Length: 325
Image (cartoon, rainbow, N blue to C red; front, top):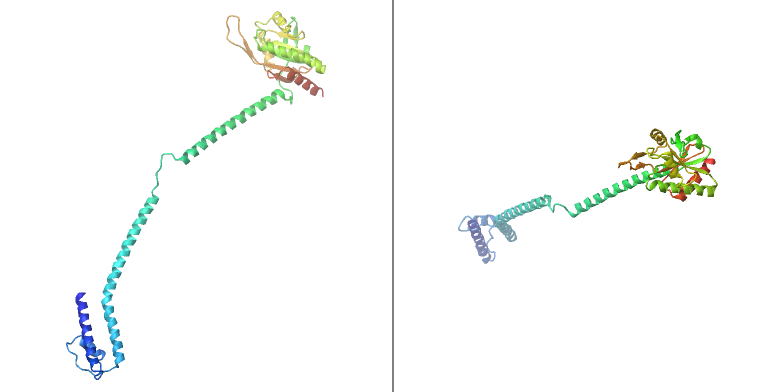
């Protein structure tokens, strides 16, 4: 490249000398044409030539040729700059591509945190609480349904004739054989128990006796209280007679053979069973229920241990009045 620049500079000096020599003659001799200028680049001397074009045209042509030389000298530099800029651009693009790939790789790579995040812990806690509340609510609903069903059976009026009660043949506390027909014509409250009962039977019989008197006072209705033993082995006629007279003079006591007691208990859906024995002393586990029977000795309603004297009195009066309608 240095050689090319030197040659171009030499050629420009020759052109400048030619033009300067011609201008000194005050344009007496014709200015060399483009052909003469071109030959000056190849020959050491410039022979005189006849002018072909005017002076202005010669200077114009000289300017064009000067621009050509400048373009020819700057072209390699521009090409070099373009190549260097393109290589720089390519390197920058490569670097940007690498950076973008690195950033995309970093973005695509999952960020690992702790083994359990706060959000996961809160979701797990909320799920556990929800499950506990759900099953607790389900349990309450189940208990409520059972309670309502039990209450409807115990407290509500009978919708039909229940399979409770039936014919029986037993011995009363005076030693006389009686059947269900002997109690027809009057309302009856029947209770199953045993004379050796330490606490429950005495409490229930006291409540039964008090309710009988209050029913008579409030509604003028006479109800016959009946006690049936579920311990025939120990409850003899004399034992039952002494026992029932301690609670009410009108309380009727009934007993019988084990088979007879088993039959009447089954007809009234009464549960009873002996507990652990110690010689002749034992207890009998049994149902704690009072059965209201109409004058035909048909079942009307039963009252459980949860009823006190007043609720038992009002319940019996209510059932009797509804039955008469």
